[in-house]
Length: 289
Length: 308
Image (tube, rainbow over the protein chains, first blue to last red):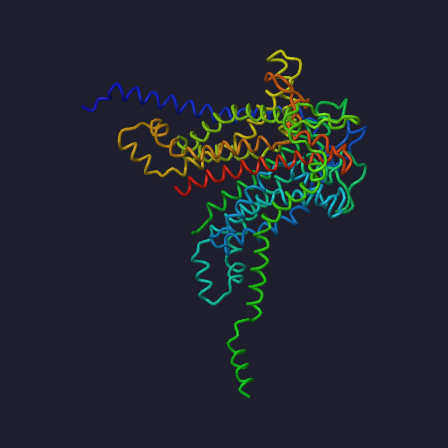
């Protein structure tokens, strides 16, 4: 009576078949990237050393290190964060704590989605039109960082809003009942409970900003500079643009040099993302409510 | 006397203490932060239009712009501004990328969302998230230095920087993002649907094909649209992997040039205010409008799912 019917057997076989098929597809999505990472390490690993990281390029960029590019990327990211973190967190606080469910909020959400969806080269055009020409910052760290800040703003907003909304409503209500104002509640209760979640978003943003190339090409990053930037109105080299330059613009370059630059860039980005993910998982495990 | 008494009582019950002012101040500050995204998106449109407007008014011939395949913007005597070949380049690369990305993204989303459990699921999700983080200039470098010789070897063609190369690269770039949005769409299908089908004796794959996929249809379409938007807007990877030659493609082994890559490659060599400079901003306006439309549609479709 409980014998497995022919139909059942066939169905089970089909199910196994599909499960294996989908697993294969998932693996095929991941495999090429592992192969690529392996190739980058195999071909570029040998060149990476303390010297490579901390010396200037020499011989028309065909030798030497990547120090000014690394240094410039740190500058660009730092200035971009100074702008995007306060604005992004403020936007997240507004959306999570104040925004009523009305047309304005819907438009804000739509604007955030579109800000993330506008092509990076269009952000670059905006940076040229607005910061380089209109505000007369010239091609400078300031112009490039502002462009990057606006481009990566959605990353901070979305992550911060999520972690603010994860704070239970009862926390706020308890605080309001004690006579606290809205802002006191946000500052003393909501933000302290959400700050680590916001931090994971900021790390993600640092990683995004580090890898972006197109938005800084015409707004402040230079192909080669023999000196380090002294302030926000100087141009600078940047790691992402440096990879583009050494892999397309410099003839007669030894093969391992661009591989080394790519390895450093991808290493930095993946490291920051991993830290952010690990931090997020740790927080999720620690959560008491 | 009465007047001052009134004032006193008013003062006593006045809740406008320092805290009240701070509260109002902060409320306005975060409100400004809140609408900043709107300000920036309008700002982007206004500033690229400002730079491109001169060209659009004085020089642009819309028919030539969209239907001519001749792109010679720097010719001194008779410059030509036709972007048809560039549109064809962008479309062919994006099209191939979607052919590559859709099956894998969907397969991965189904496996992660419906089959994988516990730790496996967690690890796969993390891996997919890490894949999405690889910068586009690194992908471009991979197209240039790993895919290029590979394609020349495998297909015995003279140039490996072509639609095939850029399509695969762009497909690999778009797939992780599409997979995670598609997985969200699958997750949004209520478990009751699955349980009802299983109670009727359906197997896992029957549940997926007959119940979950149809129910998640809109969300999956949204995922594909966002992938298309990504493909249209991608710059560095297509600049480095397409071969960057203006060409109406006839096969996937042809080199092409994309709209975005044209701006990236040529903006540096144009004089501010020149026609060439203006036409690049005009392409920027075109890209902005197209991606705006794609994102808007995707958002409407996905939102439709959530409400339903």
